[in-house]
Length: 435
Image (cartoon, rainbow, N blue to C red):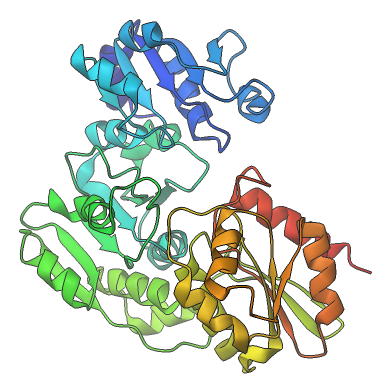
């Protein structure tokens, strides 16, 4: 534990009335509660979900935590010294707006981390897709030369790592758009993997979403470093910042790892003067990550791929192309299981790929309804199924030797599952139990 950081945090939060606005089900809210308990804060948790829905998260926090569940009360927001906002709660919330009128500070896990962690040690990664794999690869490439902390993985709170952050040479931090919404600092080294339409149910426009992502480089200063895709939009952004900019280009690689993640991580390692031979050797020995084009099982000469972390149509389009190249099979040897809840995204381009596939099995949800609308129910490949269990069985029914069954939903999971990781775990369990 870093005693200097702990003292500063305790000076700020000890004895303060703190409202955790949104405990959530992913684990991040529970991490924030436990962190603030250590600092001696007086904590109240409020969440619109009922106790039963939050059961897993409630088991992770102290039993004496004050809870207001199934609703929000304005009095809790107005009586707090600080509000810690969960990423799921939009800044447009009525309760936050009323708190702002009273000048009550509204913070996020990311804002606290940036305010107290050593910024000069932070390597931040953002993008619409590929953040987690890029972060893992950078850690893998730097390991052995530097003491590295990996933080910010989905379903965790960065606050859990804050007190030990000072003991590392570098902190590799995966930053979502929600993390970047309220920051006033940028990392010492900032990496953007890509940007395409995502979370448009949360942002007013694609431009609004892109501007939020831009915050990762917006506050950089001279001698900071940005690592960006070699594309016109990012070259335009580079003209607006003072940091040193390096661009990465993508080439085909024979791996289920995305080219974006590999070349972004490789460029970062090269900035650290790590030889290419060493980078390639470490990449060859790197492990696959769960739920990201993960080979779940090979069964009767059929390969099952778990790509449950695909939560937008562009990710599914990428997965189809990647599977075709990696396994050297035509599209009509791919059976796709997809669908779920929509985030106001465009499914036209994905729907155009469907006639080339062997079958497309749709799980229920608003994104699936959008897909059906796009195809006007004319695509004979399309099969609607009401559960993942039945979808797996249906895919096996149609599969032949040499086929790949690709579970790449291209949508969120909350209508049927707790999150995309729960969704992927259930898919793998179903596939494992096939007989």
